[in-house]
Image (cartoon, rainbow, N blue to C red):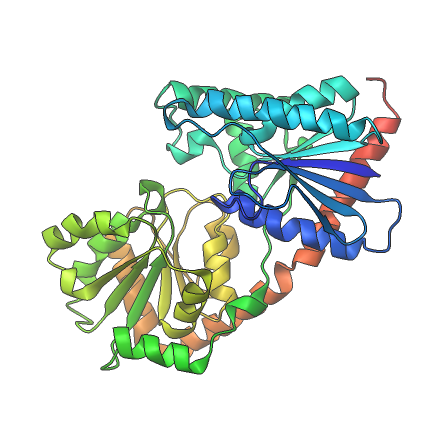
Length: 401
């Protein structure tokens, strides 16, 4: 079986969750099929951040990085479609020597290339939808660019033989927005590799403790993109409700451009209790997970919630909004706490609940680590993806195009 996977993001070009997902899935597929001479995967991606034009992973996986036109901020959709033409052209060259049995594309960003190649080669298309434009805007399509992206998402789902989503929530969202039948949708969650999240030198943790909690302060942690959908503003508005009960709590905020929240800190009079860290490395994030008392993810929209899973895998207590995929990863009072979305007082209640019962907090933390290690293993997720490939290829053999 020969598979062509197309993705806009792949290391070193990493923007969001798509890149992280594919960067973990591809090596896992390579590992579990390292001795399978009948399986070959070509990954086609753009070379926006450099990297080798050709890279091999094991004997049966090859990464092809293609130079595409830069994305124009004032014309996102059309510049991405232009890049797809470059990817499509390169795919045609690859297929000239050995045809593909299946195409797998990740999200709208590479959907136009995938759809065009499907019709050119008459092979089935599998689409992974990581999030939706309408979901990010709370069921609305606010402008022309969003409308075009929304239309491309619909087209990708319509043209797909199967659609992969990371959560039951996303399956329902695609059904509601695009009328995608549930029997066309496969729920395969994101995965996690706990090992790097648990590796932090003791002296580095101690250094962070001296910097942020030299007098034994309780530490809360937020990490994520500084966008409205991630709900940081709700968490900050919870601090005036938290501080009267726990005056020595400190909130650490990690995320590029987090300094833009400074005016809100001044308005709420909480600047003394909040550290805006800006962008931090994965290593620094992992060390903070090992230090803080809780990580809080107050998202308003979250298809899966990989950040919560990362915190859980690091052995950190989590408090999350009861929305989207977060609700499927974090089970209230089993492996963390869920709180009402868009409700700062509910977040304050969650913090109070966690801090007031150290014994139960330790139990939830242990359950979270166990769940992360057992339920979200990349080898299992790669195997489920491969089995879906096999079933689609077999179904294609029995139908006329």
